[in-house]
Length: 198
Image (tube, rainbow, N blue to C red):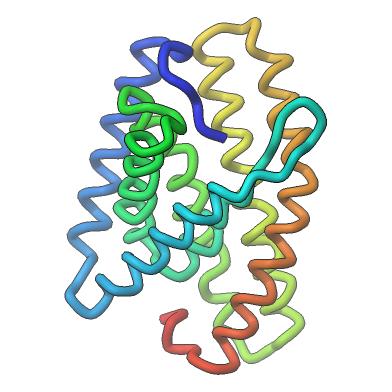
């Protein structure tokens, strides 16, 4: 779901870069020496997961895992995602440096939203509630990021509307897959090391 350089309008790029800068500063402020290894681990997980492409017609889609990153890191998800996307941009030309702000915002804002919405539900003792909430975190992480990419395109030019719809439609299998993966990972973490959810 990386947006390439030269596609978006300057106001969208600038506004996204400012918002990303603010949210990243909040995330860095909340980071401590104790949480740094977890941030680094999840940043690298996001980096690697995004490299595994699944062929889908003439294009391909990939895992995102931003919902999982959000639940495990909270506000620290922004610096983690920013670093991963920066490395992808300079090493593999996924996205670009001018679109780094918008790409980070499109991944990070849903991660924070889902963290605020589901963090307490996931921590409850009810296992069914944990499984449903975890599935929704994975599913909605991809859906909301796709929606934000679509909005970024539409705010640039209205003729991107069909492309925006296609982005959401083609990621439907990934939404389901991520929901299942996130559900199992969070359930496993809750069973063996639930303090990671604190």
